[in-house]
Amino acid sequence: MSAQAAPLNVALVGNPNSGKTALFNRLTGGRQKVANYAGVTVERKSGRLLTPGGRRVQVLDLPGAYSLSAASPDEAITRDVLMGTLAGETRPDMLVCVVDATNLRLHLRFVLEVAALGLPIVVALNMVDLARRRGIEIDTQALSQALGMPVVETVAIRRNGADSLLGQLDTPAASPPQGGTGTGDLHARVREVLRAAVRTPASQARVDDRIDRVVLHPVVGPLLLASLLFLMFQAVFSWAEPAMEAIEFGIGALGEWVAGALPEGLLHSLLVDGIFAGIGGVLVFLPQILILFFFILVLEESGYLPRAAFLLDRLMFKAGLTGRAFIPLLSSFACAIPGIMAARTISDPRDRLTTILVAPLMTCSARLPVYALLIAAFIPQQTVWGVFNLQGIVLFGLYVFGIVSALVVALVMKWLRRDRSEHALLMELPSYRVPHLWDLLLGLYERALIFLKRVGGIILVVTIVLWFLATFPAPPEGATGAAIDYSFAGRLGHLIQPVFAPLGFNWQICIALIPGLAAREVAVAALGTVYSMSGEEETVAAQLGQLISDQWTLATALALLVWYVFAPQCLSTLATIRRETNSWKQVGIAAGYLFGLAYLAALLTYQIAAALG
Image (cartoon, rainbow, N blue to C red; front, top):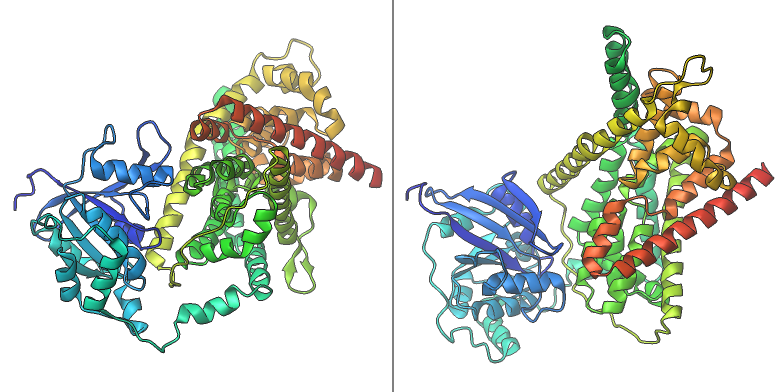
């Protein structure tokens, strides 16, 4: 087949937890593109591949769905794409319906529903290796005959696990026969298909059940979850230290070389005081961010996250949420934006709105550079009880503080709207599986790329703008203070400092808060630039922590930490709330209560800490 022929447009569809995204990664590798569907914030993932027969294929990974009767924005997008009614999106030429071989009773219902659309379909029987280990016997040929469509076996986590599917894409697929799926009673049809093609051991206890007896135990389960989260935050400091020291040394050495190679002047100041002092102060936190994402990816890929949602359902219900909100809120630990978007899976509009409004209280990775800078500067590097890192304990405490704050705010929202209703939690508990190294590495690569793009994009731009504002206008003749005091930035910092003086914030902090609205990490870059422009050491990127520990009180540091627990220092998050709720009123409510809580909490923290100190 000629490689110049028009590409085949294939869409991957399936229930959540079917391994669909892992299969998409296996098929397309690094040839992927991530964007949003026009007019909505639902993520669109596409990629391309070349089959063994030379056929070009464009692959679209559709959002997971349980039914075409959409109960969430994600399912609505999948339905509209499959029916060809989504503006700007071409209807697929062919569908690959991915099913979990260990849970066919649930997944085949969606296959039969999709087959009624009349598009050519190939069923990818995923995780067949796990099904065999559990004694589940699947006659693939009989399953294909019962469904009236091709069925191929795949193991998405293996190098050659998608070869049979690639071969099938070279073969023109026919549409399911009219009426062949028997769509009148889908549950009855699923039972018929299972009787014809699947043999499940009657007495063998499932591995999942054995593990769940421990993981979902009402006492042991929550303790295990707390231990996992505690380990995660300990690792953020302990494991990242060697890599952070290496980055810090490299940035410092490069900065010193540039400082020595360039003559004094504006270019020298821009590179040393602006870019190296600003960008360098943020780059050093990349290892900690990747360690945090590593744990989140492992928990997600292993099938543990839905169980954590189940464990927390009772607690979250009392606070006005449901266990289904756990996954969006946990996603907000990475970034509030995808966390807010993940709330689309919550069907009840009130629960969804509450989840969106409290998601910014989760401690996102953008806060990590601020937390890490202040903790390293003011909390001693010492071991507690012979095992635990004190800095990691403090970081864990900040995350817990954010979680508790979100639950309290949700409870207040529930009380204000006089909500007495109950919303039962219904969710699938996927099979446990060992996370695949390739998927973990690909996920970490994507997160590192996103972080570096932010550093090389918005953070770089804001740093240069801040350097300009901190450089001009030049001080008048005979001026005795630091040049930055006479600049636009210095004047602005001194102007607004009285507003934040009760919080213990100096004018340098006030300057950093303003560009920090663009992205929280910018605050660290801004502090590096401001202190460098204030006449501090030229290698301030490597010494910022020492500088602030010498010049700030512990009360100021604690107040700033608490400020960042609450303050919505991210315009992108507010913009996402606007897109998801289609309401400027909700944006105003979110920004108002978050800034109000930030100011009040920082004020109390500073005043109490200063009085005790």
